[in-house]
Structures are given as structure tokens and as C-alpha cells.
Length: 190
Image (cartoon, rainbow, N blue to C red; front, side, top):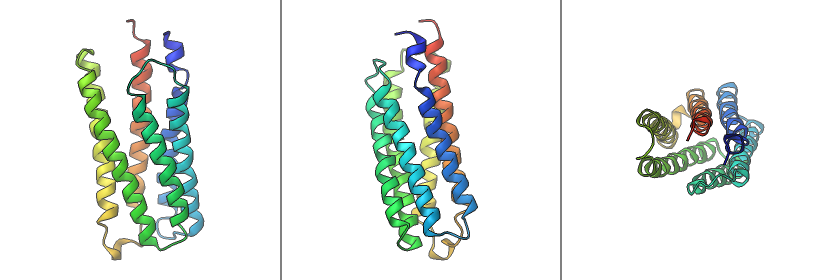
């Protein structure tokens, strides 16, 4: 497989990372004035991020046995995007809980994916392998902190979701970094 073929669809992952950053920005903008419409915007963005992840995993024809993790991340985003859209009509606590469970699922999937990347990357170049481990660890940590903050958020702190916006922005940046690492990996001579 040529590097051009294996990187052709990386723009979908970069789009997914950008959409995560948009989710964080929306959380910042509507931090103190959450409405059903802002919840719907976040739900649609999560659904779109999931569609980008699924499209990348489906269209990328590289011989990658770990493509399953991209499919699972995409499905998780789609399912939680629909749930966020639906729960935006309920209480703020229900909406925050759905965001927290979405982050928890992301952290779980990313940690299992990191474990498989660790085992499959033993023959990779040491510097590149270390960089990938750092990005995977950072993704797990950011998603885990978001889940912890949202799920265990005291009722009195529900009025402001501003700080929570940091997490999707950081995840978006990490997704973009992973996509750029994948482009660098495939462009290196075999």
C-alpha cells in the first residue's frame, strides 16, 4: 500500500478532532446559559464526529486489524450524540450525566486501544512508539478526568459547564495529533 492511499482519508480524523474542539467551544459559550438548543447542537456535533470516525474506519482500506477501535469510537460518538440530543430536553443533570458517560466510554475504548497499540508496536521504532504511547495515555487521562468531573459533579456546580469545555478541546487536539502521527508513520520509508 502506498503512503498516499493510507493517508487519503486522514482528513476525516482531523475533522473529527475539529468537531470535538467545537463541542468544547459550544460548552464554553453556553456554560452559564444552557438551553435545549445548545444541547441539540452538542448532540449533532457528537453525531457528526461519530460519522467522521465511522467513515474513516470504513473507507480506509489499509490492512489494519485494529480498525475495529475506530469503528467502536465512531459508534460510541453516534450513540451518545443521539442520547445527548434526546437528553437535552430533560434536566441539566441528565444531560451532564450523558456527557460524563460518553467521556467514560471514550476513556475505556482509548485505554483498550492503547493496550493493543502497545502490544502491536513492540517492533516499531522506539521514538515513534513512545510518542504514540504518550498520546494514547493523554487521551485516556483527559477523557477520564472529564468523566470524573461530570459524573461526580456536585449539584450546585451544574450551573456552569465552562471548565468541562476544556476536555473536548483537548481530546480534539489529541485526535488531530494522532492523525498527524499516522500520516508521518505511513510516509516513512518501509
